[in-house]
Length: 121
Image 1 (cartoon, rainbow, N blue to C red):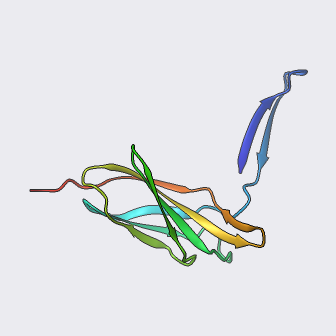
Image 2: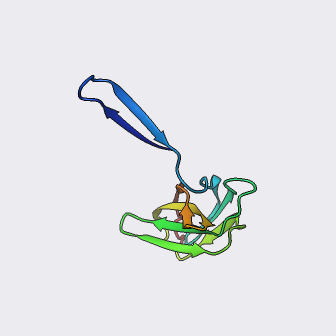
Image 3: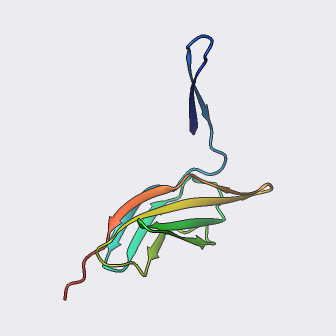
């Protein structure tokens, strides 16, 4: 759901409008099952049983940038992010992609924060 809060200037009444997000629900129970110095293995539950997904989008975000990976497998429930830097904080997100007659619909992302391990000399 997306929500909008507003005040009517004529009556000073407050209104909250909730609009359903078009598209699939986000992946559920996103967790990092294994984090090393240079990789992180994520697992999740499919967003909605019975809904056919086309793909997932994996975003890897640092304080400097975001890298996106389009994974064309809607049945996927895990993914290993590689080429990470040791001792860094990352935000990992997974977005479900559903194909419709009107085009692709994306879910809200499911987020996860990790810190990669330090390299031991």
